[in-house]
Length: 125
Image (cartoon, rainbow, N blue to C red; front, side):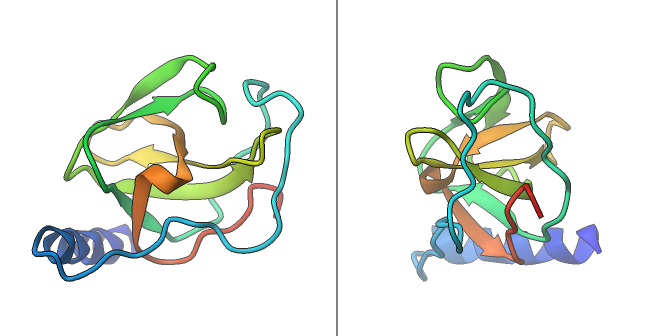
């Protein structure tokens, strides 16, 4: 299953590089909010979405906020396998997932990445 998703993500990356369009990283549905973005809360792997960065290298964080610690980086061309999304207290949407190129997991600010394929579900479902 991940092979097919990875292949789709690679094709999507080629389309993005060629300027054929982008897909919004905006998560659908109502926001799921946690009072403290750096608190540990569940982030089940309940989605099939893959993402790429739309501009430059992105930090991956321990929680859904830039004030949380950095767990790794998402570089251009890296495939980010999304587990689920969560909204922080500021109303920002963040996506938890795994950088398949580095094996590091963390939270990435949703508007800074581009959805290539699949579906993205809230972390609480």
